[in-house]
Image 1 (cartoon, rainbow, N blue to C red):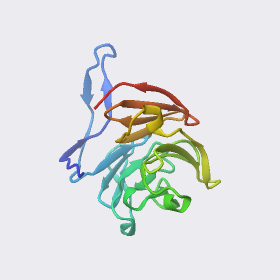
Image 2: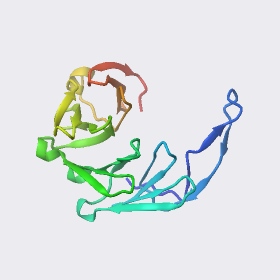
Image 3: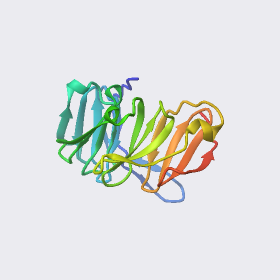
Amino acid sequence: MKLVISMLSVVLLAVIPPLQEKYILLKSIPAKDVDYFSVDHFNNLYLVNGNELIKYDKDAKQLYSFSNPILGDIYKVDARNALNPYVFYRDVNQLVIVDNRLNSSTALNFTDHGFLDVRFVSFSDQNNVWFYDQATDKIYRFNMQRNKVSNKSLNITQISGSENLPEDMVSTIDQVFLNVPDKGIFVFDAVGAFQKLIPLKG
């Protein structure tokens, strides 16, 4: 679903004073027809519009762009690793890793490894990516250097006790969070073992 944003407020907010939690807008960047955006830990901004990814610095200066029309529209960008952002093309079941200048460096076609319906990807750590495959209903940690799965979860339907339809997934270095709106947030550890369910529905 296309999200049209006429003015994108950059997540550069200050908390002043800490206990009152009042936020002050530091900067806004004019942006039209934005499908998705991400921010890295250097405050660089990544905007997606269709099949184009554009990188801006913290002063809103355009730095680099990336596009591969053959793969179609970009579904999501994960820029937590600023040196190698992940660009996910869900329609063709492919992940492209770019460098910090948005040059393509590595590609991972999930179909080549037997995963036919990857819905979400998320950064894990160096040379690894977490992904959720709807066909098998599991999350996987894939090592791109060894070109194989290193960890996986149990079937999510077995964990939840009923069919599910996840809407998103994010991860940290040691945890993975899978959002299943009618059940809540499923939390997994660094090897894909289920830890708990946070009952935040919707």
